[in-house]
Amino acid sequence: MIEKYNYSGPRYTSYPTALEFDASFTEEDLLTSIANSKSNKLSLYLHIPFCAKLCYYCGCNKVITRHQHKADQYIEYLAAEIVKRAPLFKHYQVTQIHWGGGTPTFLSPEQILRLSALLREHFNIADEGEYSIEVDPREIELSMLDTLKEAGFNRISVGVQDFNKEVQIAVNREQDEQFIFDLIAKAKEMGFVSTNIDLIYGLPHQTPESFAETMQRVLDLSPDRLSVFNYAHLPARFAAQRKIKDEHLPTPQQKLEMLHQTIETLTGAGYQYIGMDHFAKPDDELAILQNEGRLHRNFQGYTTQEECDLLGLGVSSISQIGDCYAQNQKDIRPYYESVDEKGHALWKGCKLNRDDEIRRVVIKQLICHFDLDMAKIDKQLGIKFEEYFAEDLKLLQTFIDDKLVEVKDRKITVGETGRLLIRNICICFDVYYRDKARQQQFSRVI
Image (cartoon, rainbow, N blue to C red; front, side, top):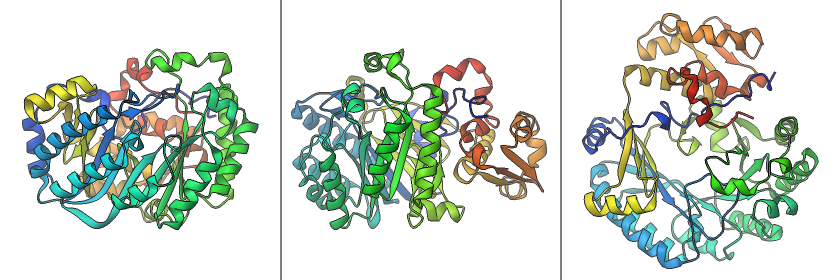
């Protein structure tokens, strides 16, 4: 059944997706959306693009270098962007911060403290909130945790990908297993309220048996959250992936087996399957909010603060404010040039129309909670669901026929197997996706 539906599709960290962003979106459009937004809470995302080493699987926006002075230059430009953007959000309180990359811990302790001080100087940051950073365990000392604590972080996400040495060598990401255990243990001792581990299945030389061993080591780590991503092999788009030989990759059937046993292992150990690639302990806020029907999804993936606008700072970062999305220049040289000329780095974006807003609500409800009450949507959006989505429900029929989705008493319920295919189910409500030529812009679902 899963093989039948294993075609390419968006991850729906936004609707419309980034493919609909357009360079005709202007600074004036963004300012209008900020002025009209009903939110007074803000989430900040900072993109730190630098990495000391190239991981062959990576499709992120990154700059490979060992020259620390390049980060000093980047922070100067980030500071200019912060000074330009922060006054637009003076009536907001920041309750969520995430530093992603690249490798945020490429920065030295002094650079991290300097950048965090800049944010505190220019934004109204709440004493209590979710303040997280992505950590590469290969290039840091345990004392980095002291720096992160001093900078105000209370959550860390550690990129592990796989504990198997053969796999690590094949993707140019060798790491010290004991150090990872020491890092997580110290973070818990120091009072970091959440630890996340990132894994990837589908990498070269992985087998269901080897990945099962990695999963057992992860259970020994006992992180609060896990992200278990499907490796998307797109060598035509990402040059580094050409170093990975096709014949070393697991077969689709092996990948499916890895996914199946991962879900069984983690749920059997007490983790809640949040959806897509995410798992959390039942007392974690992600799991609690999903059970309460209040989970949110944005460019950071599943998240907890539905009422927040999101401001992206740094190269390639994306903002979600009111009825718009806005993306910064995606390459570092144009980013610098734009900040020099205009004080900001806006590249392109998208202003949502009424239909976009309606479909965004429906897709977010399905991808976060796997169910939808048509009567509630009618009341919330002022529509008659079956009439508005007549064509979409016809597309959903194949999932209903295959018993992946049930529609009963004006409620849509996604079954357990259907949850693995939630991206495909959401596609039924995506008018932009219906141009089938777009499919190859996305990764396969499994």
